[in-house]
Image 1 (cartoon, one colour):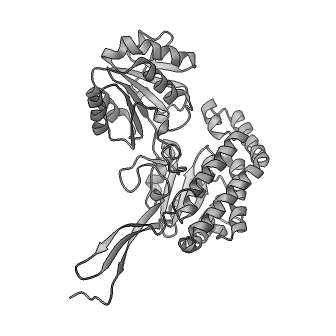
Image 2 (spheres, rainbow, N blue to C red; image 1 turned 180 degrees about the vertical axis):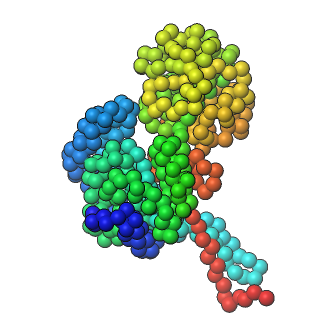
Image 3 (cartoon, rainbow, N blue to C red; image 1 turned 120 degrees about the vertical axis):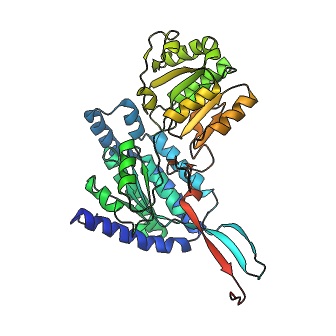
Length: 422
């Protein structure tokens, strides 16, 4: 890392270097980018012991700092997870290169050939917390889509990110790509964040992925567009026709499979007419897995060991084995609750009614609406994107899991044979 004389100078240094790399990347063909991705995957496997050793330093510090079990799980890199990370990189290799794709085109009456062509966004400033695997996902997606990226991970994953950043740089060097195409902010100084956010002249877009306070700060201070990865206050609604076994499996998976991630369920809504038939079995399975149930008055009576929910609980992304529960009188009441307390991330319905499913799909305006499946499927890898740089809850440009196409924009290419405008 270059000597940091000041936060302002350091941000300018990385920004200028990224801008230079971004100007070269659109001309690099898909084969060369794929070769780099392949080398990254190889180095992840080859250096897994070193990565785990660096990760152990972060885990020890996290335990000492009293981070929750869910946050520590987000931070942990095992041999199995590193292998899965390498596989995710290989999946990106198999995806079409979006750069240069003709989105649409045609001829004008005057003979002009007009096309909309996909192009990179340019320089991406990606700021994120906790999960070091995101370092690889973000870099892989940015390079494949022709973008330079500046990565600023959280202090809790500092040593892990340094080890992963070294792999990314080594692979760039070995494959002859611009070394500054991926740069890691090698400091945890929070003042640096503000300096990067002030460089709208060098950075084209910022993507924050972390807690609510981080997202709000980025949106407040950024001098460039922001693609927001906001709260994951996700719901599962059990409609009156929900079948017990399916409802139980979906709720348990949505909450328990990995509770510390953004697409884990935080609130369970139950139609009043399904309460006595479905809820006792669901509650028993959740309790058996150590889930703390925070219930409304009606659901509390049927869930031994549960506690009463507060209004604040329904607005909270717990990221832990805690689930809010509320009984509603109708599908419309469930939708109203989601609109009031949700974060437009992922919301699911369990139902045997085609009409109810269609109504839910229409009325719930979230980045992903799920019918008869777990909320955990709102994920780039699960939806065929290879990986994701985040799950956008915005309503413009990019929404839901952001993969290769979401990291591009387009330009018009107009080809003529000497036409002039009269």
